[in-house]
Image 1: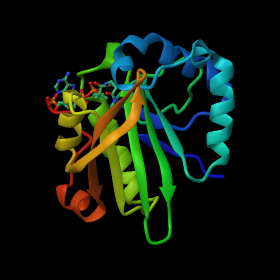
Image 2: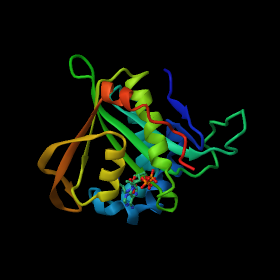
Image 3: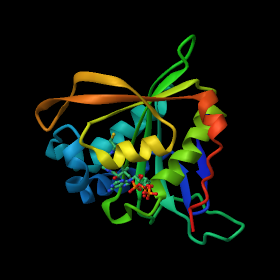
Image 4: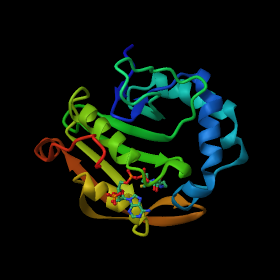
Length: 203
Ligand SMILES: CC(C)(COP(=O)(O)OP(=O)(O)OC[C@H]1O[C@@H](n2cnc3c(N)ncnc32)[C@H](O)[C@@H]1OP(=O)(O)O)[C@@H](O)C(=O)NCCC(=O)NCCS
């Protein structure tokens, strides 16, 4: 089966095999404090490689999920780009879940960055490449996200990518043991094509 690997000015964005479970667990562990406010409560087992080995294997078998992982490119201007993941820290995660075909052609987008790499434009760069892939190669028509109203960084990021507020999903997800309202935002393929955003970081 074909695996996704996207290359931008500064990043390699790719799927990972179950053998990368230790790197995935380290990514989640190291930024747990940064992600915690917007995520479900995690059991200690969540931060163990074994959990991610199973999850990566399940994701590989599913045609409803594409899980992408972000890495910094070795040399941004080298013509030969290494797609290898071994020995390289993961800087971010992007999920496309609930991919539904037929008359829907829709998916749900999720994302999070390593705390030490935040605010450098990496997520915006990665999401532009990902959305090009979603509306191009994958041929989907609509992408949605759900974001807590207090999550200003995420709302600003999504708005800058053209996502439009649809409304509030009441008590939508259990975040740290409380059912939290979430804003539903969506992006449609023709809007995305009109925007023509570039992955090039602003100077
Ligand atoms: C939201 C998140 C992914 C942003 O990642 P990032 O790599 O720091 O974002 P970027 O550097 O690419 O920023 C792109 C835009 O996002 C917005 N943004 C990012 N961080 C922000 C912050 N702390 N405050 C306000 N706006 C912010 C800005 O509009 C920014 O554009 P600008 O730099 O031109 O102002 C990151 O903060 C994160 O992982 N948060 C925790 C997990 C999470 O909330 N996930 C989303 C759940 S819906």
